[in-house]
Amino acid sequence: MEEFINDYIEMKYDNNILIAKFINSETYFNMELAKRLVRERIEFTKGEDHYLCLYASNFTYAGNDVRKFMSNEGAQNITAGAFIVNSAFSSVFFNFFIKVSGMGNKSPMKCFTSEESAIEWIEKLKKNHLIES
Image (cartoon, rainbow, N blue to C red; front, top):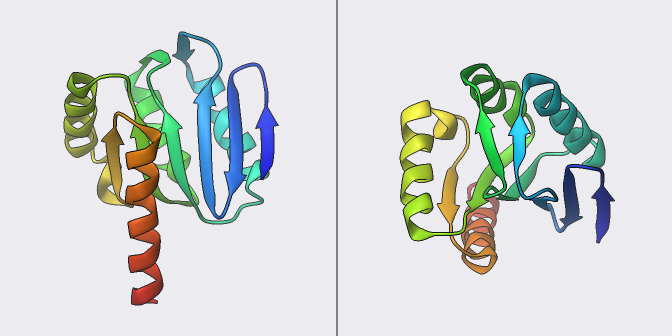
C-alpha cells in the first residue's frame, strides 16, 4: 500500500482505491488549496483512474467556485467517489448536495457513515465495471 501525507491530507492507495483523510480537524477550502490537493492526488495516483473514498467531515467551508472546480476539474481520474461523514444527518445532507450540485453526473458518488460501507459500495462498482468492460 502506497502512502502520502502532507500538512492537510493523508492518502493511502491500494487496489485502485484511494482512501483520503483530512489531518486537521477543520480545513477551509479555498481555490489554492483545492488545486494543490487535486494536483497532489493525481501525481500520487500516477494519473490512473481510481476510486476515491474520502473522509469529508473535517472541512468547514468551500465556496461556490471551489465546489464547481472540484465537481469538474477536481473529479479528473475519479471513477467513483464515496464520502464518509460523521452522522446520518450529514450523510442525508451530503447526498442531497451531490444530487443538487451535479457532482455525481460524471461518475457515481455517494455518502456513507463508515469506511466499511463505503468500501463495500466501491467493490460492488468495481465488479460491475469489470462485467461491463
